[in-house]
Amino acid sequence: MTNLGLDPDSVKQVDVGFDLSPFLKSDLDIWPGFIINEVLTARESGYDVNLIMPDDYGVHLYGITLFTTGILVRDNPDLVLRFLRAILKGWRWAVENPEEAGRFAVKYDPTLVENLQAESMKAAGPHRRGSDWLDAPRELGRDARHPHRARSTGRVMQRRRPVHDGVFECDLQI
Image (cartoon, rainbow, N blue to C red; front, side):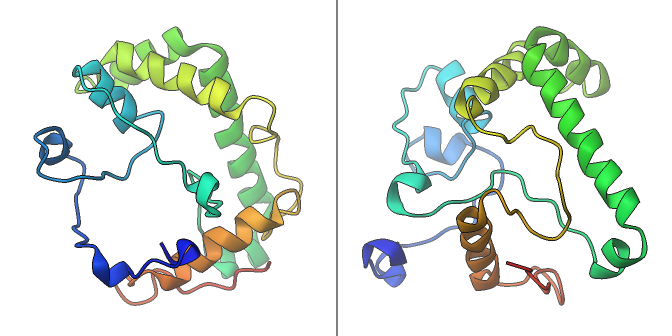
């Protein structure tokens, strides 16, 4: 909103949690979500949703951001790098094998809906195709490939209220 010159106080902001029903019942006008999750859930429930993409308004964020302590990065950078590479290897496999990934997800969490899990991975592929989001990280502590996205994510995180002391306290090497 700030990027568009809008006053955030002109909008009633509500902590929404994960239950989409207030949005689907039209109790709320806007809902934050992921293309690979809430959008699919709403459409699966028969609702047509309009997407407001933050990138279109100068807000360039990472959908998934992993954090750790500076101590772990300093003392065990190889562990952190191996962890990141393993996460990306799993995502790459799931995007390339969406139906199997859906079955696998439900095997470990029976509350999930298999076809939505498969659709989620299908949506992740085209949405990210052409980008290098599945490339293994080349270095720790910064994203040299997309510095504007790293800076934007850092600014948003710094403006957030901490959930508890120290949650957003970090050295954002950008």
